[in-house]
Image 1: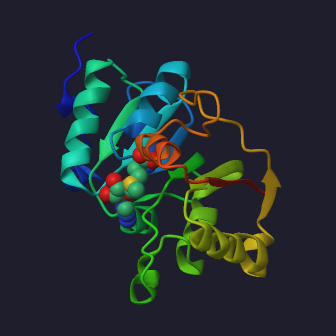
Image 2 (image 1 turned 90 degrees about the vertical axis):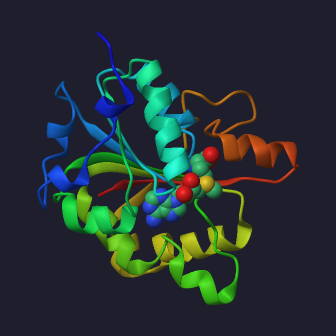
Length: 207
Ligand SMILES: C[S@@+](CC[C@H](N)C(=O)[O-])C[C@H]1O[C@@H](n2cnc3c(N)ncnc32)[C@H](O)[C@@H]1O
């Protein structure tokens, strides 16, 4: 069946608040979300390998968003959709309680300047929303090259009792597109490997 970038793109104006994410996809199946999907590399590999799982990528940069829509359509991956939005707003306003199977966040913008730290996704309010949206047993999977941001992530996820009490740590299994020495095989991960930078990872399951 033909698939175009328009089939992949989600029109937020047509979505109700909250919405049934399942309605975005032609076939029933668990829904996983990737925040900041960049050029869509993780989604392509993961969705090709797991045709029974539905993947929603959220990307706010229009150039990357359009690139991903086009790429996923060319691969005829009807189990994928792309949304152009600020993931924080979408998760808070549109995603129902206990409705997602996994949330993937790979190499999120680290906002390294002190005055920009508040823009970071890993903060208590966003994490409480993530917990609300994940099903019991649902996974949060994260990788970053930024050591200081990773420390903050761990502070929020493992030391803030309101959040830590909702999760247990699990093994981080490499993604489908990961080659030897990679965690997820995304464009940013490969760039950082070429630059000799380390990566840090964490995977949690909702209790
Ligand atoms: C450093 S890039 C990583 C891209 C990709 N995950 C990878 O590993 O190659 C971070 C991406 O997240 C997107 N992004 C950052 N904050 C976002 C938000 N609040 N909602 C949606 N996308 C966001 C940026 O536009 C950018 O494409």
